[in-house]
Length: 250
Length: 250
Image (cartoon, rainbow over all chains, first blue to last red; front, side, top):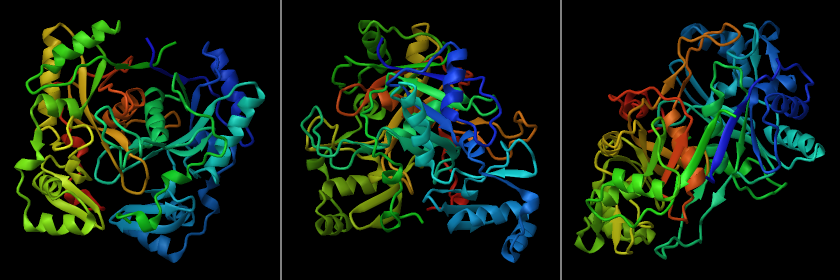
């Protein structure tokens, strides 16, 4: 049977700042009896990347702006968290009721600039998205390459969407493969040329990985085996970020 | 190794109106040496469902409205296709330049009401979305149950998204399992209660299936094995469709 295998890698310890995620991943996968192989796609939950990179903030250290204070009081939010969300944003896309949708400095449109309190390991701390999630992916990929393994790396996070309820895991950083697979200009079995179709495989891979990671169990890594990706070390997540001029929903 | 296996089912013949997709799927999977098993999730590309249900339209039979004629002339579109797109819509969400984003009668927000010309088997024909894609999924699931197999069924289609380039496969119909897995009220390993997180597993499963289906090869079926779903025969895709009153981007 050809096709894909997807499995989670459990047994990753609580991540401390400065942790080498490539080494920890190799070790955990080995210990689990599922060593990584060249050709795999490794999907890493952004939370552990953020923790390894020290992208956490103590809420007690934050002095909220008047805007953050007023809005937080109105909607029973923690003003320090609101302040962090605003600092992580380059623009507020929607602020309606208690909902705050922003565009992050990276260009991701998401709730609360991707700032997370649930996985922070302490209630008085917030976890921010990695500063440069492509660079994070490249660093992990380089560590795996150094161990002789040619593995594409995706950094994933859980985002909401327009129009549809329920969140999905999507890619916020990538290394080793392009995030979008374009069929444009190719011809289907009926001889009809594809004029628009380009699939965001990176998001589909990230979502597939979520299916084995779950959110309550501590499984921050998933391996996708059998997916044929083309090596490209110039890849970044940038092609996935729709330019504001092309976006009808901002 | 626990985890998921995902494989495509090739060898499905060109689908004619009235085709029994459950029977064809069982036969093709058997012939491919990968018989279906109870507990599998079967992801069926909507195109073959539409064809089986006769949801195709001859463009020559369509008389476009003046609105469809005018707009199509301006953007070099086929006015018959534009007319079909409008008929399949309950509302135009955005019409900017050559782009026409609609809300279908089902409540899906997508380009061109999901009307497809590329897979129609003939250039003078358009394929519409299934009339009731939950009912389509239930019918296939019932056929598999009749063969003794308890299999969740997802009907998938390829949709664009707001803010992100590249399309992904998502779920437009479901039978046997709920599309959304909610963590709300549950507690993470750090004792922090999830207040908002609900994952749309159905969309992640549909996207994962796309990774093995591809769009150029004729692989309209994928099987996901090893995903633990809870049987629920009341399930529909409705919980995924964000109510307009809750939607910030229409």
